[in-house]
Image 1 (tube, chains in turn red, brown):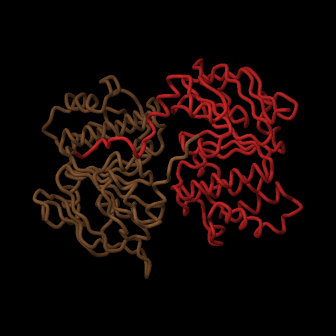
Image 2 (tube, one colour; image 1 turned 60 degrees about the horizontal axis):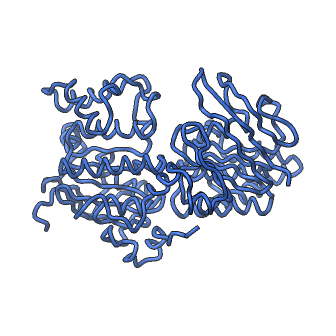
Image 3 (cartoon, chains in turn purple, yellow; image 1 turned 30 degrees about the vertical axis):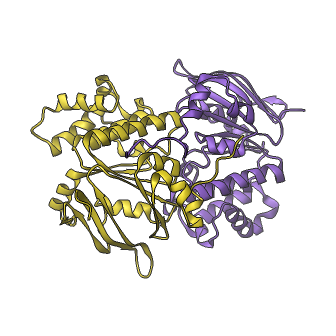
Length: 260
Length: 251
């Protein structure tokens, strides 16, 4: 089967310091792949290499094959219209601070779904409802008036409207409580089912990986130290690092750290 | 009343504008060295409650007592006296640092303003050591530290004042599981060593269970259940509380 995206021996360094070293991973269409590992292990750098947002001071080698070509060295400005959408770790960065949310949705729809531009309001409300934001009020708000968790869901609604072929999601649930996390996980699955979207997901939550990912890469110090189907990696990890990462997740069975 | 109770709040209410109460009639007490978890969804009032406990906002009605004396944080003098005893650690460590201030300067400010008679350099090194960082971190700037290291520095700063109550607002929710566990173990150790009480806010019930003896479940600004943390996952009665304790799926 042809790949939706294929990352081959990707290395990225900043000022001589290696951020990602010889990383390879690929997704078939509709696959959800989770990247886990400690902060600073290179997870977000992989997403940046795919989306073209590595920055001018990055030196990269290897290949990111997408749509029949190596897009790694293609600048961001020439990547538009390829169906790659990224949701950033800090959703506030993705919005224009001085425009109301509704205006930003309207503009996004005018650019990405021209033929439906007149229906922008209906489309926006539907997308917001899917992420659990059921108030028309959201469209009248400025980004700073929304909480981190709300903004994260608004960013996701916008991503849904873009009907991406490949969604790059960096910690899409980090600011969400347990109910909204469940809702977002369900909507990401639905996006895959209805649009065939492939999703490359960076998260520190093993719970999100367990409930969402088909396959997993575990990163440590810029390298992928373990990779495979979710069930194999989570239930019979081969590497000590993966085992430690899983064992550190708090459980309801262990002895509490405080009290007698 | 518990004999060595040292912190109590009675009937705390907070309204923003007319008719909308963010917090309704919350009461609890805490003994010296005790620990309490606040569990709830976004908008349940747990962060509002924590802001009141931190003295960042006054309650609309109700009263906080420290050692049986009513707390008044309306005036600077009262607020300062309160902050000698009550310190807070925030969710996102990065936002609490100045990007231009070294770790050493940041710690020194806390030591100087609250304990001016101390040898700051000596105390600074001791504090870093207490949170598991070498003295060499003193010269570093925030961008040279990882998220977990920054959170350790934030804990050291809170500790520099020798508070009796530490308020923690999801201090590890942005960290991966191994770094999270390191920080949680550190907080538990320090709380025991210094007899420091804790109020721990979060929506990860497994984390709250590790870190507290009791938890209050908050919904729409009200306490709907009070549970012993250790058995909370079996004892939660309401559907609202139960959703925080999902059976872990086996992969």
